Image (cartoon, rainbow, N blue to C red; front, top):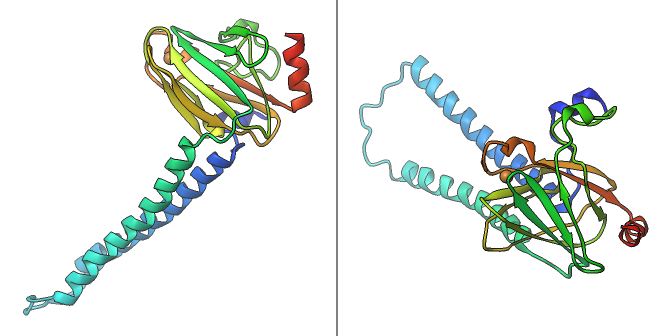
Length: 226
Ligand SMILES: [Cu+2]
């Protein structure tokens, strides 16, 4: 991977993240149009010499400037709610993975087949290999198959952590004493990175999440060999 990749987010690899990006662009267009119109109006107010001596009873303009923002809010609210419900949806998961936050590392449990459990610590800078990402690589990666509905369960053993992989469009809080649920469906093979997203103590910045996505056949081999 090139050096420049380190300065940007990874590309989207899930249908949900694709939706989120579309929604971001959609609302950004609306915001930009509003900003431009407001700036144009402010500047034209300052530079022109028009006066309106009879500024009274403007029913029509008031109707317009009440309904227009309401309509715009509806255009933002409906797609936003749609994505919110899509993000919460879990449809027929093939696999369930449990992720537990600790101060300051993650541990994972694959309990569908044989009981697999492992801890995932950040690789120290001195142990990095060529092309490894500093502060993002872990000693044990989560291995998951792509094009598969996967249910993720999240909890914590101490304080609140937050399990995040931006390119999968997932961010779920891990609270002690309760289990939260999330869904992922990865579109491509590859390595995807994330970091704990809840300030959880002194080594909060050093508990990255590293996920490797492989095909189903390799995944079952991995399960058997583990
Ligand atoms: Cu944390």
